[in-house]
Image 1 (cartoon, rainbow, N blue to C red):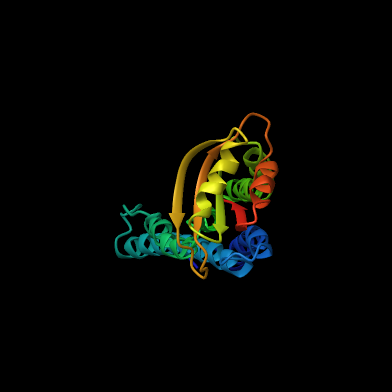
Image 2: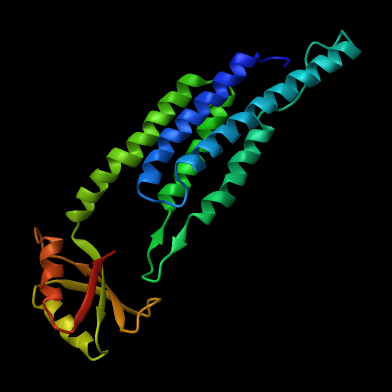
Length: 233
């Protein structure tokens, strides 16, 4: 190569595979659509793209210098390929985002992780190892540690959404009475038809009284004989 030795190239692609794999392990452990190998390939591919941009820029500069030694520089953009990686990764990320029959959006974190892995790979491909290592640590910290913090915050939130399946449409009034008897404010009720179910169901948007646990509300509603399934969204 014009600018990189074999060992430098091996190090860059190896570090990209390692960093991408570290992020993908957590996603794979949760059986997400994009796991260990996907993140590894995305990060390594982005690094390879950045290396290729550097190579082409150096090769073009060298070729023009041989044609005319008076030319000591060439106007080109080495980030052109990298910009296409950032745009193109959206196609892969969009494929991991789904909307379930219960109107839940899943896969956003995985898609964001893929995009971040691609950006990290570009930094590694450019030889900016410090930024890549710090970025890798921050991404892992966000996905692993902050997810636990997010669950704690959501469990203490006063606003919740509950998905409830019940036997008959007339049972909706019984559920509403049970909810209001606990001094819970009902913001919205959306009657849905979830895929794979024959029972009527609804999504309740509620505001709980202060210091009232989510589990206590769900347990009270689940005690109704007409309720088949209840789940917090």
